[in-house]
Structures are given as structure tokens and as C-alpha cells.
Image 1 (tube, each protein chain N blue to C red):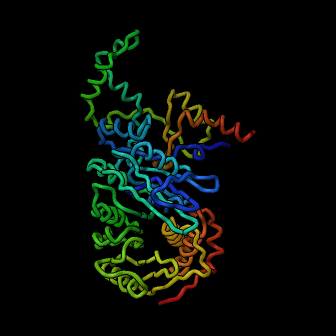
Image 2 (image 1 turned 135 degrees about the vertical axis):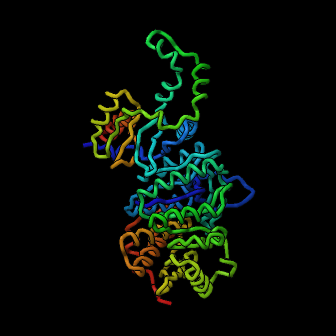
Image 3 (image 1 turned 120 degrees about the vertical axis):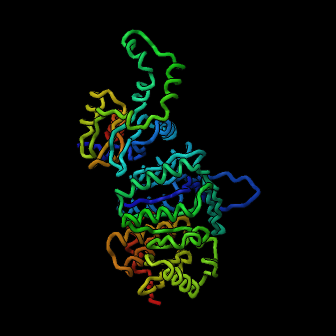
Length: 151
Length: 314
């Protein structure tokens, strides 16, 4: 069986609960990651902040009521609202419904979870410690690995 | 789990040429080699430790596209990365091996300039890492903007958690941090002949300075001078040893110290005795210098090399 631990991206870039949104964006940009793990003082995973979470937070509340129509927020309104919340601690931005994988989960389960939850990236956690990430790219690139193995 | 700290890592560009001359254009032919790999002392030690079967997390500073190359290369070996990406680029160190003249030329870049804010992120991250590791290995030079106080603090933080620290750096940094008390000190004496303000070359001087280091640092249990591969001197609290390899055939000295370091750390983790650990480390160093590669590519050679190390108590 193909296991998560054999395919995961073994990077554990993380920020503390008190880190600001400014730091979260900076780390995402420098690390070229679409999510950052947020951990407590012991290093235990509390949750993740994804680029999608930040985009959602960047739309001012008064605009959200119009969201289900064909409304599209103006980029200047989004960035100026984002600038006004740059000092917000990461803990207020984490996705509380964020699911995670364990190293011994199967890749089938990982693929299912990623697609069911409509996510691009999921943290891999071993006894509260994050040990890596699985992305949709990791799932789809398995097709190329299999092709290589079978050729 | 072992944590390796490389505050000033590098991309190693390694050129193996038949002959190297300054002031002329050299085009590589097919018989020559050009490789790029993740480098910096702590990183090299991490790669060797992984090859010996240990689980490793590598931390430090990285930056820009060369920083991503660095981390990708480290992960390719199965090591977990936890680097702080800072301003600027991860440096490139160039080594040129001239096979005809048997010379090794190195050009080491300065490295990134680390702002205070990124140092804080690094220290916070290091503190969290200490919750999941049982040994810390610190290796190499400091990037611009940081002083030896950072190394002292890293050692103190590890000791506060009861975690031992192995330190491998040059006298430049070592002199400034003598009160930090690392558990094993392996001075990087390649470009230096003095340590603690005293001349430090030759067996008698190594013994003298090693004993001074032990006297000053109550937690230090071992000092090893390794750069003279034909006479490696280990100074312990109860006994000191000299290790001499037989029929040494040097192919490439690059990476020798990092293989030695990984060897001694691995042996200690396997609960080997001091004597066996020193023999294993020397055998690992030997396996490295007798191969063209910078990293330990043939760990089986370590076991066959063990019988080629003469050990004498001094």
C-alpha cells in the first residue's frame, strides 16, 4: 500500500499562534507555500493558515453579503482591507475545520480527503507534531511515478 | 531525532578537472565532472548522518532560488527541512579539484545578511525543534549580521532541555564562546594554527590546548583535532588517543570533517564506547577521503576501514 510518509514533502516550516498575518504572508511568499502551519509553544500543530483563508479574510465583511451574486471585489478594496489586518495574530486566521493526515495513512485516503475537502494542501501530523505536507501535486504526480515504474 | 544547525549553508559547486590554471578559460570535457549539491558543514553532516541510518531535521537560514535548491537537495536525501528563509540568496561555494597536480582550491562566499527579525523567527523555531530532538549538531561559520552569541544561546537552550550539543566551527568563533560548554568540540583548524590565543598544531600542542578546553568547560567531554588525518588527536577526560590510518590513499579531502563528525555522532548514538566511537569516526573519515564524492557514498567501506586505523593511548 502506498503510504503518506513515502510521498510527503518533508518540510516543517511553522509559525507561532502570536505571529502576525504580515509574517504569515512573508513566510508563504519566501517559502513558495500555499499554507503555513501554526503551532503552540511546544511545537504542536494548532492549525493551518492557507492562502484561501487569507483571501477570504481580505474581503471586507460588508461585501460578503453580496458574495453569492456575480459580485467581484475590487483588488484595491481587498488589499487595503488586508493591509488593515496585517497585525492580526495568526491564531485568529487558522482554519478550525482543517483536516490532517498521519504518516501511515494511505495515499488513497489522502487523495480522497484533498478532493472531498476541496483543498490543495494538507499537513501530515505524527502525535501532534507536523512532519510534512501532502499536496494535490504529490497525488497527481504519482501517475508519472507509476508510469516510470511500469515502463 | 538529531537536529543539525547550519546558519550559513551553501550550494556546493564541485569541479573535478584534469588540470586547473588561473587566467585561462577552461571548458569541461566528458571525463571531467561538475556537480552541484547542498552544502555547509551542518548540512553535510546531516546528509552523512542520514546515510548512516539516522533520522535528521536540518535547520538554519536559506534564501532565494538557491535556498530552494538547497532545501530540495536536502529533502532528496530523506531529511526533514526547517529553514528560515531570509533576505538575499543562499551562497555558492566553489571547490576545484585538480587531478594532475593533486590540489584542491576553494572559494567560499560570504553568505546572507540576517536581519534581527529573521533571527528571532529562527530562535523561536529552534526552541520548538528542541521538543522533538535528542541531540544537536552545530557546524560551520556565521552569516553576516550574527555574532558568536547566537551559538552560545543555541547551546544554552539545548542544555536547558538536557540535550547534548556537538560543535564544529573555526577558532574565530570558538574563542568567543568558550563558556558555552558544548559537549563535544571538534575545532575546524583547516585555515588556522592558533586556538585560545595559543599556537595549536602538532601532537603536543593539540593535547595541551585540548586539555585547556576541557579544564575551562565542565560539560565538555571530548575535544578532537581531526584535520591532520594522519594523526587525529582525541582528548577525553579520562584518556586521550591518537588515531593513524594505514595505507592512506587520499582522493578528495572535501567533506572529510563532515564525514568524521557524522561518524562520531552516529557511533555515540549507537552507545559505542569512546574507543569504538573514535575508531568508527576515523573509518568514516577515511571512507570519505578515499572517494571522489563529498558525502559518504559507501557506508560499507567504514566497516572494512576499521581494521586500518591504528589507535594508541597517549
